Every structure is written in C-alpha cells, then in structure tokens.
Length: 255
View 1 (tube, rainbow, N blue to C red):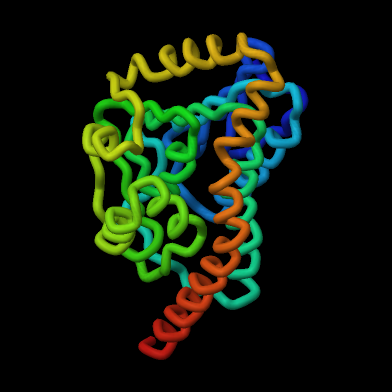
View 2 (view 1 turned 180 degrees about the vertical axis):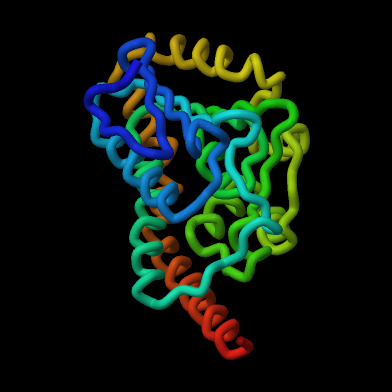
C-alpha cells in the first residue's frame, strides 16, 4: 500500500505492507531502472524523505524486473556538460550517498539483477541479498570517461579493500553474485523469486527489536562511512566534474 508520509516519485515506488517496514522499489516506467538525471535527483530526494521519517523501522531497497539498474557502458556515454550543469549533479550526488547513510533504520539491499549503475545503493545495505543471476559493475564512470568521484571512490575500496576496489573501478570489472558473495559484498545468494520473501522475513524479525536499539545500531554501523564521505565526497565530485567538463570541451574541439 502507498505510504501517506512519503511523496510520490517517477522512479521510486514505496510500499508499506506492515507499519514501519518500508519497501523502496526503483524503476523506470514500471520496468527495470535505467539511470538518468531525473532518476539520480529523485532517488537522492527519496532517501532524504525516508531519513526524515521517524516511523520507519526497517527499509528494503530493491530494483524492478530482472535488472537492478542500467544501462551498460555501451548504451550511454557521458554527456558534454557545463560547470553550471555539473553543479546540479554535484549537489544531488552528495545527497544521494549521504541521504542513504542518514537513514536511521536498518537497510536491506536486494540485488534483483545486475546493478550496472550506482551499485553502491544496494551494497550499502546493512544486509545484502542477491539473486543468483545478478552482478555488480560500475558502467557510469571510468568506462565512459569520468572519474568515479561521486562516492564510488569511497564505497568500493571500503567494501572490497583498496587494491580490489581500485581494480574494480579502473577496469570496469563485472562481479557475478557468487563472486560478490565470496568477496564479502553480498551475504546471501538465492533464486530471484525467493529474494523479496527472504528480505521481508528478515525485516519482520529485525523490526521486533527495541526501536531505539534499531536506530542506534544503524547509527553505529554507518558512522565510519559517513565520516569518510564528509571528508572525501565533495573532493571526489569536484575532480569528477573537472574531468567531465574537460572531456566535453575536448569533444567540442574535435567536432
């Protein structure tokens, strides 16, 4: 059912079948999410709405259909942007990561399929579940001519370790669900049809705990990453923006 306290979005659908257990379904027109500027802005704002709702006790974040997010690197490049256009992206880029981490309720990330754009969204869950045919890749930065400065430079080395994280970002490595589990990115792998039932069962069990214990546990578990983002996220977005604007100027010169 709809959640009256949360406003509707084009790319985000909220469900609350049990009070306090919030499901966040990311999509494009009811199908798998295809990342674009509007989705970027809306998802950042939606996470902020959730973070400001004290009645939310557990959050499930999942995609729609058989893909968590796309497109792949071959289907879309980095557009030519001015500094003012990049400023809009920079502002929402900070909010995307920080608003997700500001949610004061345990988060369960569900990889219902390949997460090719912003895989950090499900991977930043306190518990991460994955369909057995899902995968993780960053197709939105280095592969299309952009430095990964919008949080990927923080999150992936933190989750994978510095050496594996740098390799992942620079080579465009695609990790299968099994590989992601072996590397510690994913807790459980299962058939897609079992994914949401498992997430809902975990959420229902977690929600039986003391509400303050839930909130304080989430605060403890996100504190270090939030501190790293406070220190490094603005710097990363600034460098990414410089590279994106320069790449646009190069394209114009070649044209």
